[in-house]
Figure 1: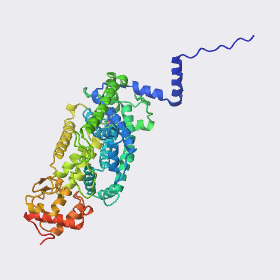
Figure 2 (figure 1 turned 60 degrees about the vertical axis):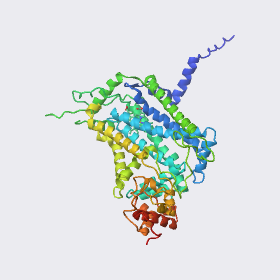
Figure 3 (figure 1 turned 180 degrees about the vertical axis):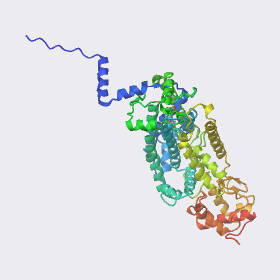
Figure 4 (figure 1 turned 120 degrees about the horizontal axis):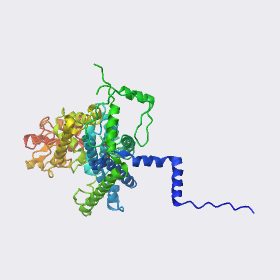
Amino acid sequence: MPSPIPIPPPPSPKQMVLATEDWVEYRTGFPTLVRKFLFRKVPPTGWFHTLGSSLLTVFILQATTGALLAMTYDPSPNGAYESIRYITDVQTLGWLVRGMHKWGASVMVILLFLHMGRTFFYGAYKYPREMTWLTGSLIFISVMGMGLTGYLLVWDERAYWASVVAININGTAPVLGPFISKFLLGGPVIGAQTISRFYALHMLLIPGAIIALIFVHMWLVVKLGVTPWPSRPPEPEPEPAYEPQPQRHVDAPVAVPVTAAAEQREVQEVGGD
Amino acid sequence: MARKVINRRVRYETEYGAQKKEGHAFFPYAMFHDVVVNLLIVLIIVLMAVVWHATAGPINASHPAGTNGWFGALYETKANPAVAQTEPRPEWYFLFLFELLRVFKQPWQLIFATIIIPTLLMVMLIAWPFLDTGRDRRLSRRPAGVALGLATPAVLIALTLAGASAPGAISGANISKNPAINALPGSQLIADAACATCHTFPTGGASGPGSSLANGSTKYGTDQKGLATWIGHLANQSGTGMPAFDQSFNQQQIDQIAQVIASLKTNSVQPLGGS
Ligand code: HEM
């Protein structure tokens, strides 16, 4: 009589979780990435360090409420105002979506100024975080562009005339000014073409640029780590003079391969202060 | 004297490594702060939307846009390219630029408000890390940077407040103290076009960006043909930021406006088309 094949005991819940994680890990590497992101060591941080993540949240909120508005909004001189009224007065919770989008924009601008102030006074834009500040500045300018193009979309008196003045002023710029004005207007006066152009800028072009810039900005923040309050004097110059090492450890959630060429360039930065 | 080789990278990494040792893991410590503040911000946005909507008053036939609430109306009247009934106020975060237009209101100065200062601000913003390259981050060791960092927002806030409290339009067609001038059809057109949101008239109006018309036009005086050309399109083409009114008014209406401006010069009604 053949001996029966032993039936393995059913896996415990813990084993199942581990197996699932292993499945995902082997195929995507995400669990390691998330763990490195979450458990990376950061220097002492406080409440002022929360402004950047608040900006990210508000941006996502703007994108979401904006997408909801776009489902009803009609970007035409005859339809724009009526669709805004419909959203505000008739549509279920339309007023809330529009209100959050409208006031979220102002909150975002305030947060931008506060976050810039925080990084400025902490000296967080200094070596090696110059590119973090630079991408941030470009985000700032783009967000102001969102404010400018979004304002006209309501198509009420105030927005219409403010945009007339803004476009006219733009047209006074030397060389490119008249060209940009013509492009924004899309015709001799503000009309159907203008509203389509502002709409395309407001919901496609500028947000696309902002999303790309936020990705770069966030990558740099995680790679370089945040800056603590500058309470201590900088380290004295190392003695003796630094000898370039072939391999250097970069303490970041995802190690960035430092190529030999980049290493060489970095060493060439060596010099006076 | 041997030139000492300093490596800014080693120095930085030593310093940052020591700072990290004093720190903690991002999760849960720093993330806790993030979550609290993020929830608070979302709550503020929802509350603002609720208060805005709740206080804006009933929407009915006599108040198609609701009455102005704590945070302003839900929407104003629909844009009518022919008549401006409200002040062309930008969003609050552009008020500083709007105010700059008042400060530099002469045509030759306008380029400061429209191009030079905004461009300078943007270039400074982007280039700042490459201008301020000192390695000590402590405030006491970078007084010039800190002074600039305090002065810039102070100036921006001052300009914003000044822009926000800029005088509004005058009521109706009462643009002058002379009832005969106010009775001219052009005076009503001036009220419709909201000229007083940019120009001063004898009874009030804004001190800029446009020039003062309290004593008529300095440039054209009683030259109604010149005024009509200016109002129609020349002002716009000269890059003053003034709309081209021949887009919204017909020639007769523009001539009537020119008549009023010419009459302001002498404070007496000038015949239409000039003497
Ligand atoms: C939507 C816009 C933005 C988002 C989502 C964002 C997000 C973040 C986040 C999450 C951080 C981490 C630390 C912190 O929160 O303080 C950060 C850091 C930083 N941000 Fe932004 N930011 C934005 C705009 C800006 C702007 C406009 C600037 C400056 C012009 C800027 C400059 C910086 C700098 C220099 C750091 C490094 C801080 C450090 O090392 O401590 N950011 N950003």
